[in-house]
Length: 61
Image (tube, rainbow, N blue to C red; front, side, top):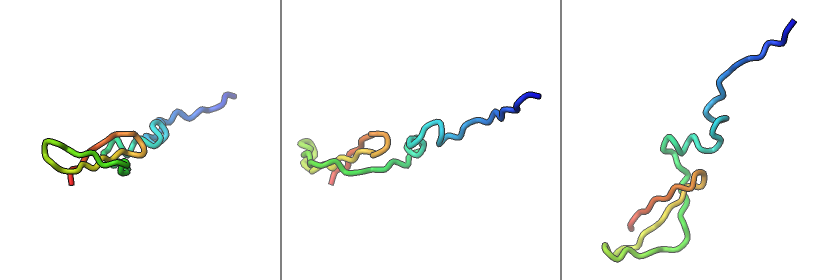
């Protein structure tokens, strides 16, 4: 007799650990220390970096 091997497709969490939430837009934003100044608008800018994937975004205050 032979052994039966189950052929199941791995889940998205197993294929891309820690990155599936970011691909769907649910980043884990953390503020980056230091406050750069935007010269054109004359405002302080807060930078955020995702803890999982490293994507960055900015927000003027």
